[in-house]
Image 1 (cartoon, rainbow, N blue to C red):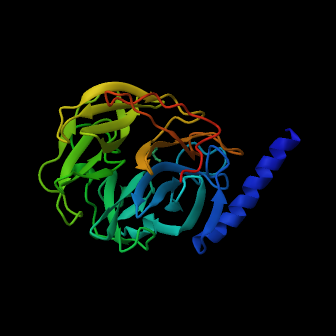
Image 2 (spheres, rainbow, N blue to C red):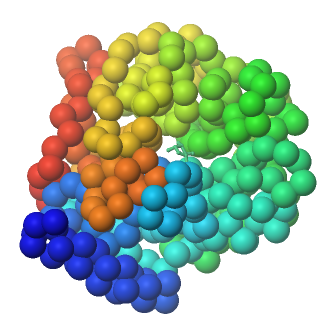
Length: 325
Ligand code: FUB
C-alpha cells in the first residue's frame, strides 16, 4: 500500500471518529470534489430546496468491511446554501422510530407541505414479510421526525405486480401544481398512487407504469411544462428517464442520462434546481478504504437540458460542482 493510501485511510478513520459527534452536534465541511462526504459512507440521496437552502437526506452504509450486503440503520441530513459548503446535522431519523419495522433504513425522500416536513422511507416490515414504506413527520426539516401513522403506508401484501418481496422500496413524492400529492415507488415495477392532503394516507388505487429496463429508484420532477420520471435502469444500474405532459402519463421513454456509477451496482439519483442551476445527485463506490456497492458515497454533478426539454447526458466528475451564489 502506498503512503498516500495510508493517509487517505487514516483521514477516513479520523473522520468517522469526528462524525460520531455528528449524532449530537452540527458538523461543517467543504466538499472537495466527489464524493462530497468523505468521513462516512452515504447512499440513496434525496434533496429538497426549502427557504433558500438545500436539504440533502441520505442513507448511511455501515456494513462491516468485506460484508456483502447492506447494513443501514439511520438516515443523515446535510444542508448547504451553495452546494459546496455543507453542514451535517444530528441524524433526524432511525429505523427504530418505526416500531412496526424491524430493520433496513433504505432509500427515502423528504418533502415539505404547509410548514411540515414528511419523510417517506423504505424499511423491512416486522410482521408482514417484505419491504414496506413508512412516513415520518416533523415541524422542521431538521427533525426530530416521528412516525406519522404508527403503521406502514404501503406493505408488500398491497402490491402484486411482481412476485419478489422487496418491490415496495424507494419512495419519492411530488406535489403537483393543483396541490395533489403523488407517491411513486418500486423495485421491478414502478408503482404510483395519490396521497391524501394529510400526506399520510393513500388516496385511491395503486397503479403501475411500464418503463424500459426499470429496476428501481424513481424520481419525479417538473420543469417548463414537462414531468420527468428518472429511474435506475438495468442492473448494475444506469439512470434513464421518461417525459410526460401529465403526471398521470403517458410517459415517453427518452434514454439514459447517467452511465454506471464507478464501483457500485446502484446509482440512485435525485434531481433538483437550486439558484437557477440543475443538479444531478447520485452515489458511487469511490470512497476508500472500503469503497464498493455496500459502501457508497454521494456525489453531485450538473444537469443540463436541450432546447426541446430533453436531458443531456450527465458527465460524472471528480471535481464536482462549484459554489453557487
Ligand atoms: O440502499 C438500499 C437500496 O440500494 C436502495 O433502496 C436502492 O435504491 C439501492 O440504491
